[in-house]
Length: 273
Image (cartoon, rainbow, N blue to C red):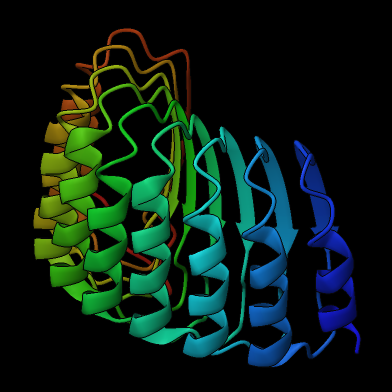
């Protein structure tokens, strides 16, 4: 029974407006996730939903079941969904994007999809869905340790260009093989988000190099309202030229009051003074 039994009970709670479910590390699988989804589909009055399904062996089928439910929750304004270390893949990510496309009232979204075997197609699909969430003010998106690459970043960038009301944005793309092209695409997208005041970017271990670092810096210079910035570019083969270019462009962010910058490398780089 487990998750299915829980789902059956929730299906009767049609007046729920706030729901928090913490079910991490329970091996609920596709069947359990789909069962929960069927229940949530009846909770059309939900405005605040937190769903923690980390480490549950959920694949594309389970993610699709959840997505079908979320698509009915058109009144959601706050959504936190943790699916860390499942196996939803591109198909599951694309299903989530279709659901998010219906949640046009979302203002706060946390989506944790790290370690889910998501490639460029899935990331681009997510971007298409998020592009409809034009009312988003706070977005935290964790895609750490997938394989989205530069093309996937371009798809995500399409979404960011439409989220013009974003003021707080946290994006973790660590270990995703995005390269300098991906970093440049991300920078171009961020340049449109002029209302961002708090930005956290984790791009560690992506081989973006000097060119990628400089492109990012140039883009951030357009975010004139930035006051707080955390930027992790560790282990990215960035040399003296990249660091210098990044520093020069960040100097144009005149409203920055707090800056945390990670540039650690496995190999020590000696910079001339």
